Image 1 (cartoon, rainbow, N blue to C red):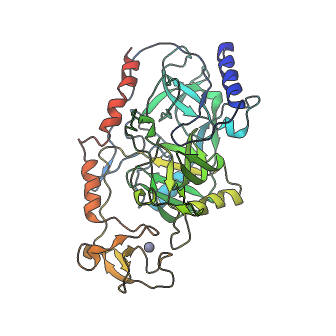
Image 2 (image 1 turned 180 degrees about the vertical axis):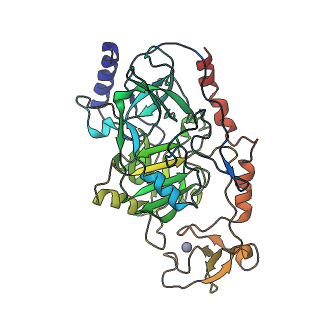
Image 3 (image 1 turned 60 degrees about the vertical axis):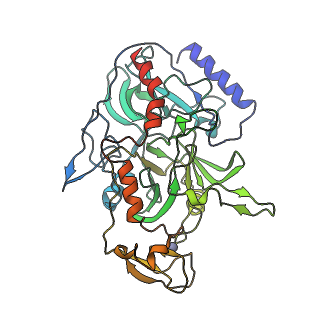
Length: 436
Ligand SMILES: [Zn+2]
């Protein structure tokens, strides 16, 4: 690290030490270790095709990468298909290569987890910066270790909101770049808990000891105009990460987010936010109905209602805390690449309801939403017929979506379309910067 850079870092630390900011969803406090800056040339990244079997196209997280070869069970090459429990589990248990910038004097653990560094276009700090990675949490795909102390790696750039604007603004783009090899470290994840967030399905899948034990509703980030500016950094960054800091509770605009666990610099996994009623009780009315769709400022909002097995965000938080798993739990986020499609459920799939006045359809014959009741079965193919057509999807057990909803999503993500037209237009500054 150059003297000038060290000075920048120390200045940043002084600023941080002078008062830790309240951590808000859309105002992430990030500091950078700046190795240096410079200029250089050309763009990497050409789209590639993923393997197709049985007429169904499987997408992997490295769908947009020019590099194909890798260990079969890695995050980068495992198909984003939650139905293959064994393949997903093997991927979740594969060691993860994270960035570890080492001890920085005066920095607490919490501050260390907010550090970021850069990926360079060449193995040289004077070359152009192509992306950002977060300390201790973000996994990178190592493509090549060079003899000169540098490694070529790939990841989705962890570009966040910042003042002044970051050099790259590579909002959640899959980027390839160089980083000093000494900053790379392998971590073996725990089998006690592992998480998959699918941005296409807007679901969080909970794994433990080789099995998927819950499917929870979630909301990832939505790129939007907030009244005064566009927020491209709202798009939740994809990739594989370690849960890294027990934040506990944070407040964003008057919204209170409980059971927060930080990963990837400024991103948090937390319970769906609530407001406080005058009588002190929690009010989830404005946020809970939106679960299952994108709507956060980048953090991942997770269901607070309990599944039939009693699993929710509080359960996840308490498990990580009681078993001291922070730093060992892998969370992977699957990119919603254009062209990906949600599978349509088997028409014979059984669903359940309460014929004596229930307003929901359920995943199993019992649910924590309707305690003590044994529900009656019907088939998925009957869902649009009376009396099932008026039933709503149970927010506790998150059963299959209706066919109409699945087809609407699939239409938006159909090959040749552009579900993130706004985000792509906001990425133009980055493409221009690379061309300069
Ligand atoms: Zn239910």
